[in-house]
Image 1 (tube, rainbow over the protein chains, first blue to last red):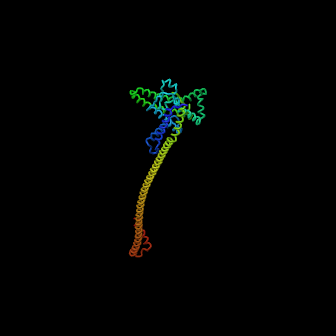
Image 2: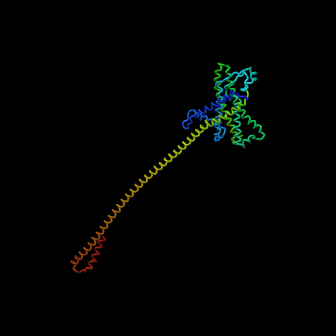
Image 3: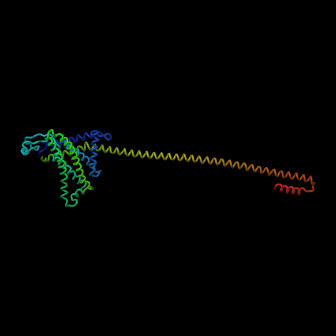
Length: 241
Length: 160
């Protein structure tokens, strides 16, 4: 059993930051005199509400609101985590527990760069975990709330299409995981590439950091919206196709 | 870059814990407060609506009361006017009838007096003429024939 220490640290840091931000926002809850943080959080909740409502009937939004908020906050914070700094150590000896095998060392000239600080979402294993949660949730909700139409949709429009529908079912979480991973990982790769320019890379770095924030927000939003669309497709049979 | 399933597992656990924790300590209370505010706003809007309706009702009631009062005042004035007109008419009427009655009475009195005077005068004239005649003619004419003669004469005089 091997652990990726960097990924675990990154996940824990993301979780802690998310919880701290959320707790700060709801520290002094008030009905008629909300604080600035509470206002911001309520704006975010309203935004999430309208976003979810665009994929399913309004009265069904409520149970998924907390899920959507958790997803978008966790992924957004995870995406930003890798931007400001990158801690890399060089390992010269094999350390199988964290993924440095002798073969890896041999193939890379005896040196392995270990990134201790990165976006958790720049790791396919992490995004796969998130996608898996969504996958299980979507099919559980489909079976629980909308069993008849959920099962029927695999044979839609004709039973011959079963393989196609199965591929679609598998492709959804796979694309979900790959899209998020690829975007964030590519961003970090470009950051480390720009770092090779040393001082000359500062303008590029500024531009790319800004753009990465944008990408991080977009990807978090996309992941959440797609999750809601999948849930809606599985549970709301009016919108099934 | 290799795929470590432990990371996947840890992600799933961490995410589920995060969801549970946030739901319990952050979003639960936040949604509660938002719902409470929604209720508050709804309640205040309802209150505003009902008080607006009340104000409207009071307004229309007052308007109706004002209209009623105006109508009553007009009626009273009208009534007073007709009463006074009628009273004036009555007074004039009664004065007129009184005057007519007085005039009639007077005319009647005059007539009576005149008749009385005429009959008295007639009697007197008859007597006098009888006396004169008896004195002049000296029993050549009896009293009865004389009276007849005088009456005839007086009738001719009266009819003229």
